[in-house]
Length: 428
Image 1 (tube, rainbow, N blue to C red):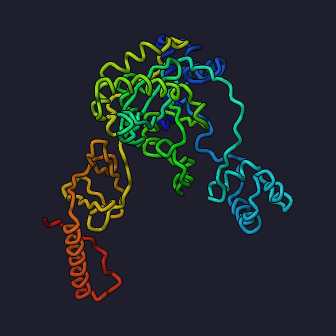
Image 2 (cartoon, rainbow, N blue to C red; image 1 turned 180 degrees about the vertical axis):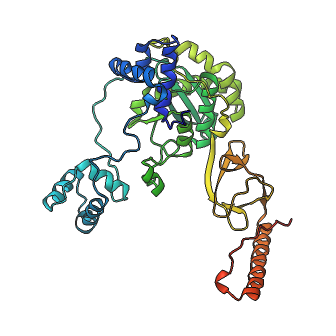
């Protein structure tokens, strides 16, 4: 019996589409467009799938180290030389590679640039603006959805500015909107959640480079070793759903959603004024109860292809566990977790009971519900007040000291102190 296969999101998507081809629900030519492959490449991939099943879709070089990879000692030598000699001169990667080659340290300029970025010695530089041409619409509904926030005085010039989160399908111009106080991660998650519940999971999102959508922090050591880019909470939710985030370099690049902002600032602003609506909750009711449907009926167009490439939500997947905030924390010796002035006690009734120093996943849903997970299983816990936490610490330290004292008295071997951890119940 075959074991489990480790497949990427792209490979899983290929498997899903090619299964539709095998069942006669989709032609291979249409499947090549959905998978963004040439028709000849789609024929080869389909043949591999027929012959070997899902295993044939996995890249043969997975897990292998490249034969062209530079030795780590050489990499460290190049970085060291850069810091000692060239860091203060602010040289470009091409010129820097030439200077290093003259010293016998020959390395490709793009490889050098990636090394310096990974070490925190280099930052990406904005390129000069290029001449832009009008981009053709995508062919399929759900192939690319543009997303942006419109900050405006939606309730009148005497009211605070709020943000309308707006999604527009690139192929058809179909739109969906949601108002919140600011352009926050929570607002972006709610808007995408609404889109998925109505239309399905799109293949890609087109956004700007705001910190809600993409992260500009330096990758952690674990991310560098795994070859992963740092993600925001919104980006991680999209990764769970297999949604690619494509960032625009200018507002003009996502012109469809930008132009729809102007339409809403004209029509929706007038609608709110006519109805004398001044609250976010009431405005969202207007958007969800017919206004956007009427706008779509008036301005949306038929996509070039009648094929809808939105994907259904997988069976058993709760979107509340996708659109959430997650953080890993280490379990203390007294089975407590601390995070941002919050204290949580893991009860001893959990089976299996995690051990101290184990990693616990803390997950906050958008409604504020907190779940603690260990090996993907929820844990029973209770929140502690700061006073209860301090008493718990004192009790744990007292129990540990007493056990240590008794152990020393019996054995006379101080090097065995603190070899046993006692689980301490929390007092109210």
